[in-house]
Each structure stands twice: as C-alpha cells, then as structure tokens.
Length: 130
Image (cartoon, rainbow, N blue to C red):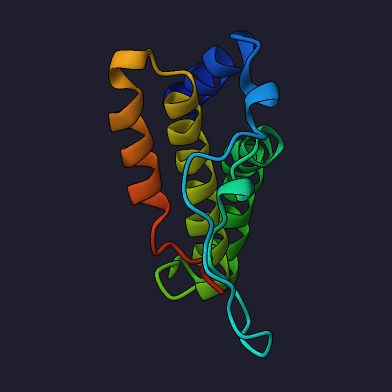
C-alpha cells in the first residue's frame, strides 16, 4: 500500500497548491445536528494535508507494529480486534478523502465538476467509526 499512497501524496504536495487549497469548500455544508447527538459525521475540513500525512505515517509505521503486537497477544486472531480495525478504517478514509479532495481542487476546468461530484459523493453519509 505504501508504494501506491506515498507517490500520490508526494505529487500532490509538490504541486505547491495542497495547503493553500485546503480552505476551499467543494461540497455543501452538513446540516447541524441536535447538540445532544454525538456528531461522528466526516466533515470536508477533516481532509487536510496534515491529517493525510499523519494517516500515512500510521499506515506505514504504527499499523504494522500494532498488527505484530496484536497477533502475539491473541495468537494470530486479528479479525476480532475491534480497536485496531476502527483506527485502520478511519485512517484509510482520511487518506482516500484527502486524495479525492485534492484531485477535485486541482482538476482542469473540463473535469472539475465531475471530480467535485466524486469527492462530495465520497463524503456524503460517511461517519467516523467509533
């Protein structure tokens, strides 16, 4: 996975537009929830360069170490390790969302609408796993 994600993020960052473009909203804002509700909806603003780089670090360094440790603790049964899979799922979503967002922000005019729709469709209805 590292061989795929790192070059994609590197290209986006080298274009010099990644951090400046993070302030632009592509999708309509989410409707506010009742304050009594724990809002785990994914926000467009969650997909930042810093979050993507942190997620990539987790996938490259922390996740493999945790997998080895968990495998030792549970005798190889990783399918039922909820804590690990929650973090892993949220991390993948962060990297995926950031890449789609940057692709939409930097799309040529002829592809802009389609890429924005793709990103917003990805964002729509996503929730952090908790």
